[in-house]
Length: 195
Image (cartoon, rainbow, N blue to C red; front, side, top):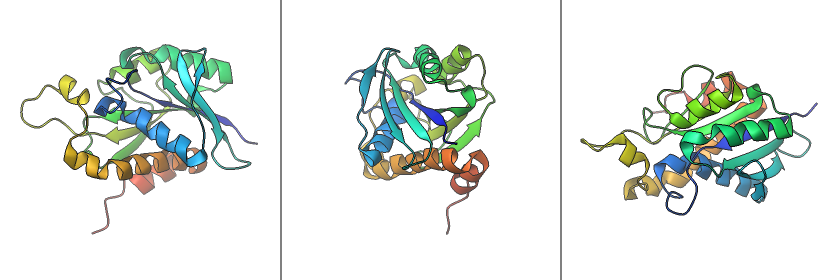
């Protein structure tokens, strides 16, 4: 029987942050919506949502971009989970990850938040850390740049050249996770690149 999955892309609201590294989770949701012709609309849970399907006859997807700032993403995520009747095991959080290189995707479920305040707040609001995550690598800043400034900067020109492929890979990871499970998605996306 088809399930409903809530896919939450973390980021900050407004045009100032739209193209920054911290908003890569929301960029991945834009890719997922574009693949299905889905349109985001304002939801009463302080988010923009697009309701669609993994594929016809398969699981329903609720793509969600909180309208709150990153550090308080939990309220909208938990509110949407309640509204759509989705348990935490089917809440997929897509977020930027400093400790993963730019061109890399990693998946996990549960465990710590790794210092990511958005993930921390979602775990607090859901009352559990046991939800799947698609961690989209943005890499660490060069030199001595403060990571807090780095995540709020737009992607550099070298990154922009391959950003569309990176976002596409992350969207593929979300789809694989939902359709085939965490282990299958990890096996596909954690494998070293073929030489």
